[in-house]
Length: 131
Image 1 (cartoon, helix red, strand yellow):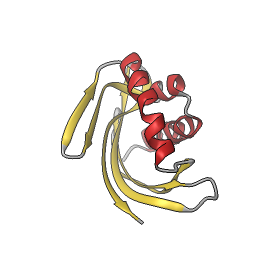
Image 2: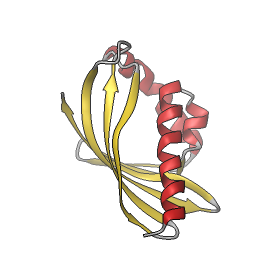
Image 3: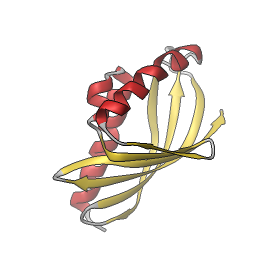
């Protein structure tokens, strides 16, 4: 286990959540490393650049609004493995309405990597289920 890497990876997770909640797409894209890989709905998606991520992120705003999303909370976070340039993180995230009520809780596994001196989330895989 590598405590310095763990701290950097946890900071990347929190930066991801903060910028997602702000819907600041450009800053949000900077919390990732590329290519960014996501496994969702049984399919892998590969996003090559921050610019491509910003485009995808902006398209997701109306979907979030339709489901009543206001913000996401990290309900739990556990570092599973860590090394000098990679950290595996298990999370439970809650999607919340404006009143703070949780309408989705889901478990997710992220890999934070150190690329060219930058810690960012490079892989995400989530299990969504209604709460």
